[in-house]
Length: 285
Image (cartoon, rainbow, N blue to C red; front, side, top):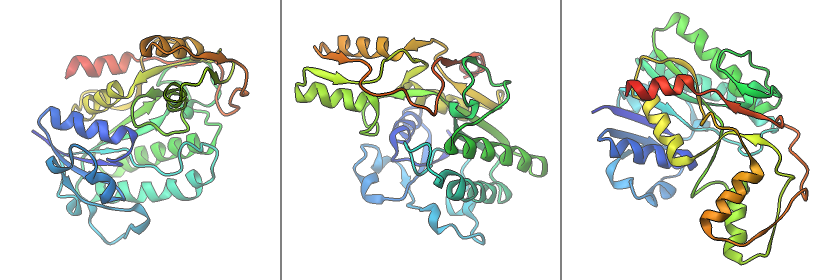
């Protein structure tokens, strides 16, 4: 059994990660900014919950001790989403998160898993591999990519294991209300006859959030596979096809109003993740 610190524990992914860790029998130190939100989680009584807001970060505090010297850290916290174009990612989040993670490392943390984003690849299309150069094209992708580079350089002076989980697309209960599938669920519940969306021709890499959480936990609890790891299915699918499959599973009769919204300008049309490193992780766990 390991003692695992999970930041952003009450977020969309965080809640599932905490649940997955508990299911595997690990001790969880959960943290987020709002205890009242945390108390609503089914797992609240089974974790050690320590509220913390990165806005109140103090350089002289030993956060490794503050969070009870965890064996492993899964850092999911991040503000400002899903507004990928916001300057907050570069101007605020980048250095705030780096200072926090650096504090943990210099005070004794030796095993850290951090979530990145497929937006680090920028506008590159096709099957994206971890060895490809990063060309971030929006503030969120740039901030995450720079944080990763900072943490890699930190490893030159401080010995610790870094696993950078590059997230692609996901869906599931509890997702942001502005997300495609949350809006789709609302349309189904409201009995709408039509659903407005983009043309749906985008090729993406989707995973249910339960699978994403399980992959993050598997990555975090092993040390053989390090560095950047794509958290991806490796199976490209069009957004239109996925929506149609989702509606079929829900037995919902909705007409798709394709082309109502323009395609997003912050992501390429066709891309998915190479998941060979993730497969290596799963074999080792």
